[in-house]
View: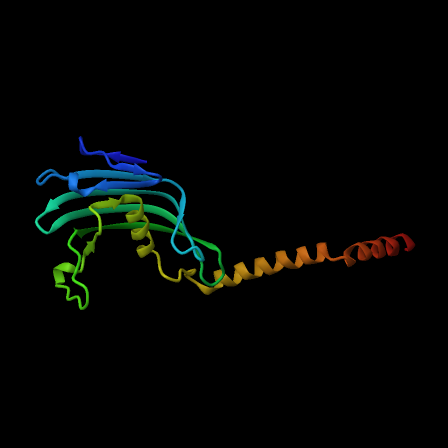
Amino acid sequence: MLRFVSPGREPAEKGTDLLVQLKDIEKGKPARYVLDVSTHLCGDPAFPIEVATGQLKTTIEDHRDGYLLSYQIEAKVQAPCSSCGELLDFVVSSQGRLGLSLVQPEEGHVVLKPSDLDVRFLEEPQLDLQHFFDEQVELEIPQFPRHGDEDACQRHYSEILETEKKTDEESSPFSVLSSLLESENGSKS
């Protein structure tokens, strides 16, 4: 859910996208948005990140070189351990500033000044707040999340093997014969 803090400038809703039209932001009048994020998946489908709860607070102001985005993100997420696959809990807390430029760099060799390193070049004068939130969450999670200690992965593997062993024994076509033999041996005693 998006809460609009600055009066008079509502974002456009396009499907599930929450688009802020940058051209509607007036010089000297920052637009403030608060996005309350509900449970959803983001990231690589092979190793998805599940966002349990989250919030994005943004302020966007017209700037001489484009727009200036100040943001703060708080989120509780889960990502699979890259070793054992068990879900790990992460708390994401991030804040920063980012320039939004509508002027694309020229084709070919691009030389960025130090001031350009925190700039996002946009093709259209709009910003999808949900997409921005998901990108920032992905950047805060380790590329290959793992348990803090290897023993946790080993315990998880042991639990999986125990469960599989019990399931295999129970689903074996010979388990019925085994139980008949055991009951027959028990009745002969």
